[in-house]
Image (cartoon, rainbow, N blue to C red):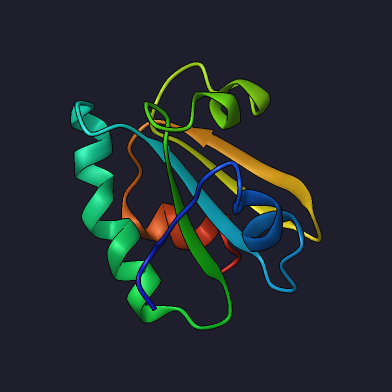
Length: 103
């Protein structure tokens, strides 16, 4: 499954109520490091079946960025059972994103 684009209307259902871990990438189209991570996020979305891979465009969803105190992008968060359990900032290689997910 490709990475899921989240909005403030879908965040609760897709992330907080998910029965499996969720990696959320807070990003923007004008952000260079975000563009470096984007293909990896899409790749993980297509490869992994036991986790959800999601993206939040901070320009389109400023309320979510504020709620989760996203001060720089990309910001990557892992949610389990409705709680944020890991948070990293900056572009990360695939192996570090997999490590965030316990892979």
